[in-house]
Image (tube, helix red, strand yellow):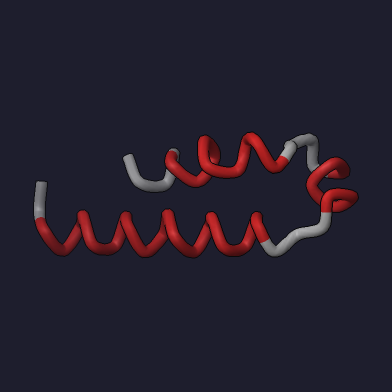
Length: 47
C-alpha cells in the first residue's frame, strides 16, 4: 500500500475517532452507537 494513502487513512481514523468521542452520550445514543463502538467504527476508515 502507498505510504501517502496509509497516512491519509490514519488521519481519517484519528478525525473520526475525535469527532465521535466529542459527542455526548445522548447524541451517540440517538445515532445508535455506544462509547464502546467508537474505536471499531473509526477503524473502518483506516482499512
